[in-house]
Image (tube, rainbow, N blue to C red; front, side, top):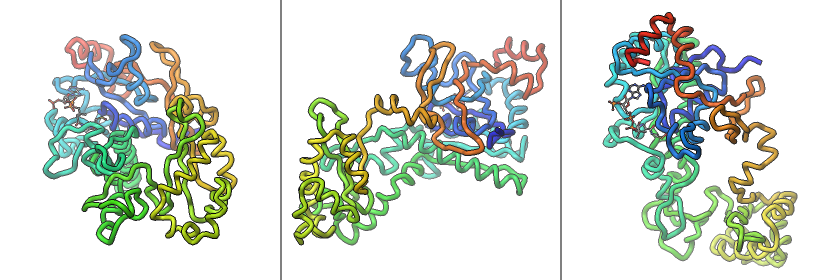
Length: 415
Ligand code: CAO
């Protein structure tokens, strides 16, 4: 089966997480991704959080599947010549260096367009134009500056970062959308374009519902928040614990075994349409005739009490029994699944969302496969490249260098 992006060649100047997430998805969709790395050094994540000495870390291997690696010193004269040839031969260039790094190498957007007017040049930066544009940014900085941290956490406690890498991987996924739109645009315009995603912008986009709440706050308290009706809301959206961000109240409740198992919890949503079934199953049929309980409005000021009653029932069941009982009643709910449970989940293995990959230096490891499923273009997950593993073949086949020229470039330290 032909891959969706077969024939698209990516000049991958990315490192760490945000950029590599983007180019990994493009590689899974069939693009030929050439990862450029500094000779002898490579992407810093190869050596970060290592679990096995001298072996590429899981951090690196899980973000760089299906790519080819070329070592190239893009600051040397020979390296710049080779890089210029690569710009001529590629369709998309992706980078996430600190602001201005590519310009300092001599490759401004103007220069890149001069070399290849069809080139799509995509970047991740911490911030868009403005007071912070020169800042270097990592995941948690983006979560803090994009509105996620101030709205995450328990009421009255410190702001909290989330484990989901919404700043890095979230921005990388946004960048994929921009690149695909630019590739489509090029099919009729014939021209490339600049694609930019700021991590602050991507996080704020993912926190869109909190900007919604900021504006609702001007018209009164946020009634679905646990602080309603007893506490002051202040003038900015407060943290709301595990309250649902949507129109239906939800909360995390303990399940059987919670005393010893830190993940023995369920998320239960008390959706109005299925409230009757929920009330009956937890032994509160009395609520159905009681005007204090039988409308969503009546329940709003006492959601804490309602979830306490729901929890009394869930504590008598495992999180999987809760799912089995509530699902047929159309009560939306989900068990809190640990990473161990996800790693062992047969259905995720069957769909290729969790895959086992074999690596020559580390052996077998688990990875997350492509979560985007295309019927005509399934993704096979291939191991990440060793540093410079494909240098010679790329220099020959893509750049067009002879064996002698490759030898010279190596002796000069350009590759
Ligand atoms: N050949 C020669 N030089 C190279 C090279 C190569 N193949 N690849 C990189 N370099 C150089 C860069 O040009 C840069 O040199 P200058 O400082 O002289 O311009 C230098 O290596 C270091 O790059 P950097 O400043 O991007 O790296 P850093 O470790 O200091 O910062 C990070 C890392 C992530 C904070 C920064 O790159 C950044 O803010 N990126 C944008 C936001 C981003 O993506 N953050 C997400 C990080 S986690 O996903």
